[in-house]
Image (cartoon, rainbow, N blue to C red):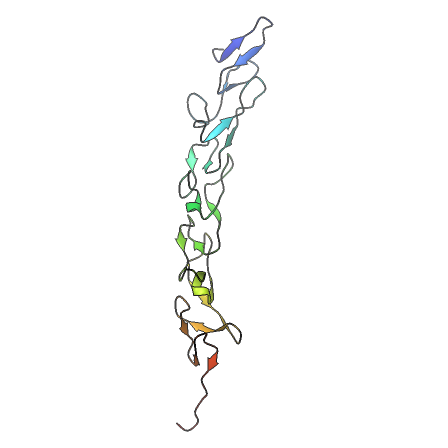
Length: 171
């Protein structure tokens, strides 16, 4: 069939990217059936192969010809997990804590050495998050406010926002 060679016993030996008992099948993706090259995927070829591709992490689609969000070399901007593989979607389905956005490429508000939200709140992270902070409130944690949880909430004071202002009556 032009996709391989036969030996003296009439057994076919398929060329790379070809499959089937007569080597007539071509693997998914490009014309030469290479699953978008060795860096993107590998074809299950040969006489007993089925022509499907196993994609390298960061690539997706039947022929491994699509890149995950971010880039194939840096899926999900290096801060999450991509739905890769032949049946994948290329979407980031999980971001590392403290990162958000469809490509997990945005750090949460107030990210720094103390953690997200300056260590005084919880970030709405993940692929569907918006990176905003929900500030902590309590006797042991302090009562924080502000977009990055850097201010004491109204009625609280001190380095850790644990002091509570007393209400003055008649003033």
